[in-house]
Amino acid sequence: MPSEQPQGGSGGNPEPPPRPPAREAGATPTRFLILSSALLAFIGAWPTAAVVLCDLASTAYYIGGIVESQIGKAAPWFILAVMLFSYAVRSVYIESCAMFVRGGVYRIVGEAMGHGMAKASVSALMFDYILTGPISAVLAGHYLVRLVNAFLVHFRVPRTISERWGAVGVALAVVLYFYQVNVRGIRASSDKALKIMAATTVMAAPGPSPA
Image 1 (cartoon, rainbow, N blue to C red):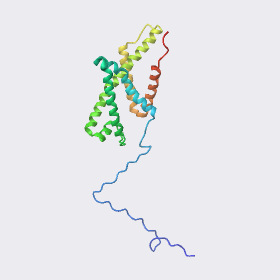
Image 2 (cartoon, rainbow, N blue to C red):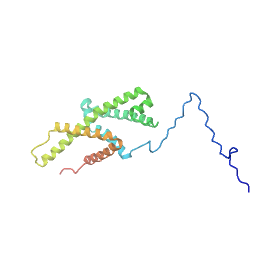
Image 3 (cartoon, one colour):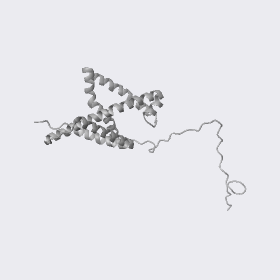
């Protein structure tokens, strides 16, 4: 029975694999975008809703009274116009997110509408955070101090907490706490936001009517 001869030269060594064609001078390498679970980290639907509601609902709690005190009975129409404009901004944001651009507002808006609009968007976002964050924290402090004082009066405690300085202390504690939480990342802050939304829903639920 004849034996099989290995492929290759006379020495029986296999032929080396063909070399890849040389890259032309000035040619740019092809870039590939790999999408996997390691690159795309999402949070659940309820934590996401909690983040959005804690941002929007905290403003909705007091924006009606502030606007009505400034422009009168036309406040609902003004708020409706702002909500419609926000819906248009939401549509643009969803469209820009379809490009799978990793990053924050500056990166996403920069890729979609240019660096000029990106700078304007970041400036508006910083103004929003600086303005609404402390206002929400101070209002939360007022509500909490009034609740504590109501309990103190109910249990006949002779002393109460100063509403002004108590609200300032609560606001500082809230801002520092959420600063520390947001440094950890969106997963940690979204979990905390979900718990805060659940607690707010329970406290806002209507109780039994007084006799």
